Image 1: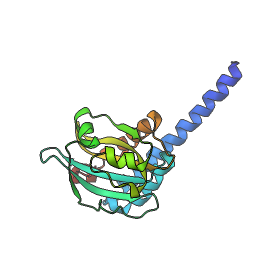
Image 2: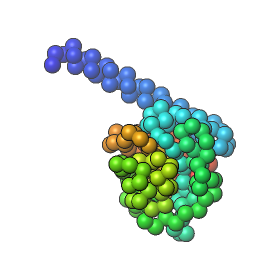
Image 3: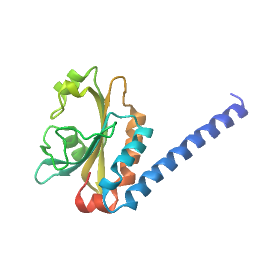
Length: 187
């Protein structure tokens, strides 16, 4: 390739990274601007959807001593709440993707052929009527401890990838240190 083509490609990559950094900074500003996450969660979900398309977004708290997951916030992409994942919903941690993440401290993604396979394979997953076909789950880490997860679920042809996972981890890094997340254990 010519040096001019390489320079143009590099300039394009730099512009994409600058736009991504601006979006991530906005997420961090948004979360730190309000004393209550519920004041900004809908806008946060929209910004995340701009970066990683999702059907559902959830912040969960992990309590390792009780071996539970507590739903703190859950929204469908249309802004409606998620039946069965209302704030405070308590679920067992064992056998879930969040359980794996709490040990490995690494995010993960899984894509399924259809919503039936999604429901059958993932412990605690909603039924096929939810039309979910994939999950991207990343840890929220505060002072070296996994306090929860940011979970995105896809539907239809939406697929997660290594790039989605990396973006999800960058988003999680923006919100993990927010005081309410650490104090309340929102994750």
